[in-house]
Image (cartoon, rainbow, N blue to C red; front, top):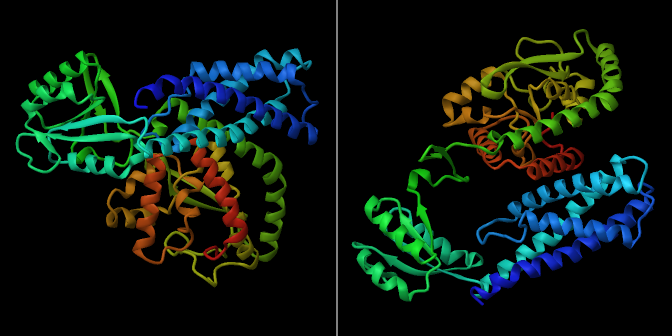
Length: 456
């Protein structure tokens, strides 16, 4: 079942995906009809939609689930398919069934398909992994050149059986261990009898030898992969840029450097922030403003300079929760802080004091999800104490963030807390996805409702 599985898997995946899409459409149709968002559709209407889904999934090659892909990659790919499906459905199907395109039913259909098909696709991914753990659908691999990071890769093959990579050993002139099959010259004599699928080359091999190995691999339809050295073994994906016939590695590229990702995140920020401003802040600002004014003199808003993207300063807005004082920029709020007013205590505990920052989002100073902005004096202090602290300013700061939903919010009492914040912010920046943002937002709501220990 080494290669035969790959021959039949695409057909098995596409056919089961078609059935799953039809079931998903039935469930979405039933649910939307029950809550009154849709008039209901029969099989004659849903079947063409499933065929449309089948065509889009096949054209996007959704059946190509890489053996080293994680579940979030499967969900990101599915999100793209749902996007194209909803767009095509709106253009091709809806006008024939209603006088005009109905935005809410179409968006609800897309969300329903994303949830239900997401469960199905991740389930398929999990089954595929378990199939490989049992020794099926494997790939034979060798490493040419031992040392440096090569043993770490061999350990990955040993630990991650779900990758389905059968490591046959090393070819190296100096290494001598039970996994060494011979010298590098022995590779060319032994390789024909190994039924190889993958050759991993250590980056320190001579260019002439690397070229020879690649030439052999091309003639025998074997894939070749280069093992980067320790300096490039970063906790993120590497990408490449081409300058004519010359390639360079983009070492510190992040997902939001890509235009489509940046546009998607900004579009969501603008739409969501506009909704909050129109339907919530329009009445919340006057109401909270009156309560603040009744208790103490001073402005309704507390405006504080903070560092944003690329360290640019901006005016961060909050409802004023303290009596006016000269220490707001340098002294963090602590438990039972005498500066906090009664209405301010409620605002801080409920996090309502942060609500005006949706105006910052609309203005482009902030994002809904991102690293929380610190005051300028705090930034100067932490920058001198923590390595790579400034890298958290690569993107717009957020109203909420990964560090906040992982328990690192509120007062910073010790160096461990700020270091943990920076690590989580760095992980978020290097691994951003729209689904990660959605997860953080959901977790934020949970924290607001059930975990208020550090809110004061």
